[in-house]
Structures are given as C-alpha cells and as structure tokens.
Image (cartoon, rainbow, N blue to C red):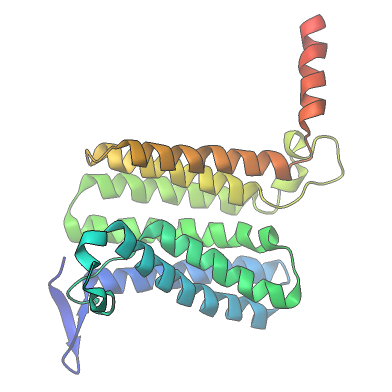
Length: 244
C-alpha cells in the first residue's frame, strides 16, 4: 500500500492518500447535494466543508498519534512525515468533521443536528467508496463486505432523509419530529461495523468492545431523545398493555 502510483514533480502520490481524498470529495458532494436540496445557503455549506476537512485531518492525525503513542513519543516531528508515517484515526476524523461543522454553524446560530444528519449521510457515502477502494488495492474480501454494508446504510438514509420526521413511532403523535434520526442511527451503525471489522480481522479487545458499545448505545439514546417520545409516556404505555 506504500508503493507510489504516480509522481507529480517528483512528489509521490500514494494510492491510500488518493483514496482518502477521493472518498472525502464524494462524501462532500453527497452532503452538498442534500444540503442544497434543504435550501441551506451555499456559502455556509462550502465553509462547513472546508472547516470540516481541516479539522477532520488535524484531529484524525492527532488521535492517530495518541493511539500509536509509542511511534510518536519523543519523535513528534513524525506527525508531519505523512509519507513515512501515514495514518489517520477514523473517529478522530469524524470528531474533527463535527467540530468544524459546529464552528461554522456557530456563526449563523443554526441547529447542529439539522446539518449533521446530512454530514452523516456524506460520511457513510464516502466510507463506502473508501472500503471499495481498499478492496481493490488490497484484494481482501473483508473490505468488500464493509463497502457493501456502508453502501446499504447510505442508500437507506438517502431514501428516508426527507421522510423520517413523519414516522409515527419517531414523532409519537406529534405533527413532526426533530432532526437527529440519521445522526443517531449512523453513530450506532458505525459502532457495530467497527466491532465487526475488528472481529473479522481478529483484533477484538475490551477497548474495542467498550468503544463500539458506547457508540451503539449513544446513538440509540440520541435517537430516543430527539424523537417525540418520553420515558414517562413509554412507561405508561407498557403498564397499559400489561393490564390488558
């Protein structure tokens, strides 16, 4: 994976790096299209893409260094040597994307989850392309499985993005529900797929299980909080059914 595919002015362009860039561009295109359809302002959309790209790279790289502490300890210059010490942490990049979006929206005081629903859609689309590219480059069936999984996630969320606020179970008899459906379920699915990836690659550990569990539960909690449901109403509903 470290063999250069081509050189531009003696600068090696690596397949992995090209794949990351292409995946981000595709995910950004999906996000831009959906945000544009939602009548969000073009300049804000573009600003959010730029800030998210910047912070996604920064936090992705920093968290990668923390996770691989032994490689970078006392050699912090290696953070900048992307050719010799490549790597980004996926969840660090997602945190960075979310942080960049938050910084952008803070200026216009818009609701974060209205936008992050669409960002989550773009992340799933870009990740599907990323795994498909890895499958071609590494000839590994596991990457094909995850490419298909993220593609199905992307297709489903693309189809329900304009409909989920009207789901009866989600809005719970209210006129419409708040955003957050795609964000919450995306987080849960990212956790499950992260766990599955480590299982297939025989890299399961308690840290992986804990992190995947936190993402899965946290995503579901977010969906529940953002829906029109309340704990009190659901408890009363359970007792009513129990008395029948």
